[in-house]
Length: 434
Ligand SMILES: Cc1cc2nc3c(=O)[nH]c(=O)nc-3n(C[C@H](O)[C@H](O)[C@H](O)COP(=O)(O)OP(=O)(O)OC[C@H]3O[C@@H](n4cnc5c(N)ncnc54)[C@H](O)[C@@H]3O)c2cc1C
Image (cartoon, rainbow, N blue to C red):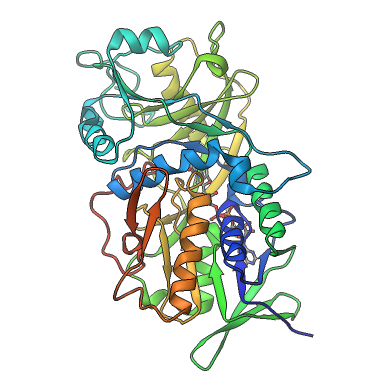
C-alpha cells in the first residue's frame, strides 16, 4: 500500500534532519528518506563543523553569528533526549590573520560592526602570545607546491589578526544529525534509511511524491530536496533545473588530520584559525590533533566530480595542505601516513546556498551548501519550514520573498537572498568562506 504524508524530505544529513524537525514542529506529518544507514552519514560526516560569523555578505554573516546561539543552547533547542548523548559545541573562538590577500579584513570588520558581532583586533605580539606555534611571516598569495616561491617569506610580516570570541566547532557532526533526528521523531517525524529515491512523481502540475528503488511509492504534496552533493541529480529528476539561475554540483575536498607540533597544546589553547595567505583553515581535534581544510585558493584545481563515482583516496592535495600549514607552524611534523577525510561539498555557482521553492509547485530545495552551512542547519530547518508553510498557504515567494527573524541577533533576513533565480552574487568569496 502506498503511504501518504504531508511532506517527504530527501536526505537525512544535518540540514535534512533539521528540515524534518522544522516541518514536524509546524504540525506536518513528515517522512525523511535516506539511501545511507543513519542520519548524517553522507557529506555531513566529513564536516569540520566549524561555527564562525565571518562571511563575505551581511546576510551570510548574520546567519553565522546567529547559529552559535543555537549550538550553545543545543539541549534547549532540541527539547528531546538522544540515547547516544548530545553533540558538544566547543566555543574556543576563531582567529583570522590580516593579510593583503584578504584586504587586511577591513570588509569583515565592517560587516561585524553592521551586525553587532563582537570581535577583537589583535596586534602581532598578541597573536604570537596567544596562538601557539605560529609565525607571522608573509608568504604572499597561496601558491602551488611546485612554484619555486612556495614557502618563501616575502614582504613585511603580517600586521596581526582579528579574533572572534563567539565561535568554535561542534565535536561530532554525525551525532548532531542524530540529535536532530531524535528531536524530529519526538515531534512526530519518521525516518527511513537504506532507501533511495529514484523518481519524483507529478500529478496535475504539481509534485505528488517519490518513487524508491525497488518500486515503492510514497505520496506527499510537498517534497524537499536536501540531498547534499546529490542535489543536482534530484533536481534533474524533478525537472526543475531550467527554472534556476544558480545551480549546484559536487566538489571533492580533502581534510587532513595531523598531530599538533611537539610542545604545542593546540587542543587546549588553540582557536579555529584562518590564514588567507597559505590558503588553509584549521581547528583543534581531540588528542591534540589539527584538522586542516582548504580555503580554495585560485592556484588549486577544482575537482568537480560525480557523487556516485569519485576517488576516496588521498592525493597530492593532502600533502600540499599540510605543507601550507607548516609554513605558518614551522614545528609541524609532516606525517608519512595520510589521515583525515575525503568528502564532497554541494557547491552553488556563487558558493551561497539555495533555500527556496522551485518552478514545480510543492517541490522545494535546501541545497548548494558549499562547504559552509553545517553551522546554520538548525536555523535552515526553521527557515525552510516557514517558507514551505507560507508557500503552501498560497504566498507567492518569488514575487514577494518572505522574511525570517533571527531572534538572537534581532535581525531580519530576506529569504530572497537564497533564491534559485538570483543572479550570481558578486559579493561572494567564491570559496568555502561563502
Ligand atoms: C569536508 C567538509 C568540511 C566542512 N566543514 C564545514 C565547517 O567547518 N563548517 C560548516 O558550517 N560547514 C562545513 N561543511 C559543510 C557542511 O558540512 C554541509 O553544508 C552540510 O553537512 C550539508 O548537509 P546536508 O544535509 O545538506 O547534506 P548531506 O550530509 O550530504 O546529506 C545528504 C543526504 O542525502 C542522501 N541522499 C542523496 N541522494 C539520495 C537519494 N537519491 N535518495 C535518498 N537519499 C539520498 C545522502 O545519502 C545524504 O545522507 C563541510 C563539508 C565538508 C564536506
